[in-house]
Structures are given as structure tokens and as C-alpha cells.
Picture (cartoon, rainbow, N blue to C red):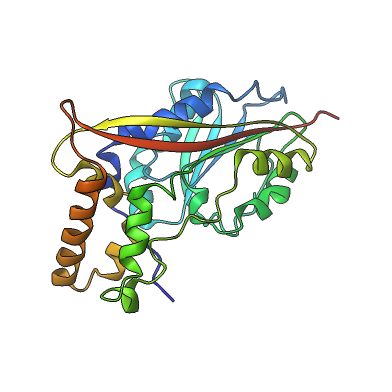
Amino acid sequence: MHTPPSWDPQQYLRHAAHRTRPFLDLLARIPRLPATGRPPRIADLGCGPGNVTRLLADRWPDAHITGYDNSPEMLAEARPLAGPTPGGGHLDFRPADATDWTPDHGYDLIVSNAALQWVPGHADSFPRWIDALPPGGVLAFQVPGNFTAPSHALLGDLCDSPPWRDRLAGLGRGFVHILTPADYLERLMALGCEVDAWETTYVQLLQGQDPVLEWVKGTALRPVLTALGDDPEATEEFLAEYRDLLRKAYPAGAYGTPFPFRRIFAVARRADG
């Protein structure tokens, strides 16, 4: 069994603007939360370094917002953001794993940004998450849908190749359990929700030398870097091979390196009554 990946918040945040854009699009499609007579309660599942969690306080200034993550490194980066928010709400961060997370009390909104792709079978958790919402409460998430793109397909092929398979087999193919927008819609409608599901492909223009490699170092490459972490020579050898493959798959253009970035979204509102 492979060790869970270690995370590097600073590497992840190198492309913070690009990574935040899908969350902002998701946020824009979340409907009004139910009127309960108290400040909204919001859970951010897989909050990472907290950079998008704090954006929830802009939309719901008086909300009590809790970010959950299973990475000590990410939570350490996020915790300085905790405390009262300018609109009278509160922001805090707690350890939790989305694989078995069960809400400890009711939430008006459960949101997850680019986290559920790490959780095989995450759709099986939808019933208990929806049960934690009041009528009119919302579950909203977005996940990457680019596991068949060259960035991920080449990583999977390299991990499973003869020189690497004994140490890395399977580590490059972690996202095949992502569902289609139609599948998410059907699952959530069966739970009595009104559902808005869609997909978007952003064409990110990345800058710098080997920018696609630098991008995946913050996400899809984490399990590989963790598995090779005690062997710097092997790490450099693997990265050099993967870098050369990415250079051919994503050639630099006159204005940067275009990197198609497909995302899948769903916003489910629990029916009234």
C-alpha cells in the first residue's frame, strides 16, 4: 500500500489564480441559502491552504465557515487565516478526511473545490452529506475532468513502465473514478435535489520553463513525489523523463504554453419541504 501523498502548499499556490477560477465559477452558481434566522453554517471539504475558503466569507459575510482537510501541511498554511471575518462571521480549520467525513451538525452549504477526485467512491457519500442540509441547503463541488489528457495519461504510462512499475504502478491513474456531469446529476436528483451540473474546459496560458511540469508538481504528481521522497536520484531521473514527455505534448507558443484544463461542476439544492 502506498503512503498518502504529502503536500507542498507553496507549490500548489504557485498557480493560485488559475486554480481559483473554477471555484469562482462554482461560487457564482450557488443559489441563495435557506433563511434559518441564524448565520449560515458552511463546510469547505478539502480546503487545502484556505485561499478559496476565505472567499466564502465575501459571499456570506456573517457565516460560520469551517475548512476541513487531511493534510497537516495544508492545514498549517490555512490556520493563520482563521478567526473573525470582517462581516461578523468566523473562519476555522479542522482535520478531516473526505473519505469518511460525516457532518457533526447541520450545514447550509457543503462545498468542495478540487478535492473529491482524491476520494474513490465519493458519490456514495452524497446521501449523508445531503442529509446534513436543511431544505434549501446546497452541496456544491468541482473536480478535474482531465485524467485522459496528456498530462495525466503520460504520467500513468510512465509510472506503469518497466523501470518504474515496482515502485510507482498505479500512482499516475488516480482519477478514473470521476463521474460525468450527467452521472452526478442523476445521483443527486435521486436524493431529492434540484441539480445544476456542467463542465468547462479552460485553456490556461502557463508561463515559465516547463510550466506543465510545475503545475502537476502541485497536484497529480504528489503521490509520485511522496513515493520517491527518500531517493533524490530516482526523483530527478523520473522528473527528467516526465519533463521530456510533457515538452513534446505541450510545446511552448509565442505567448506561453497553452494547457487545456477540463473541470466538472455540480450544484445540488435539497428540495424544500
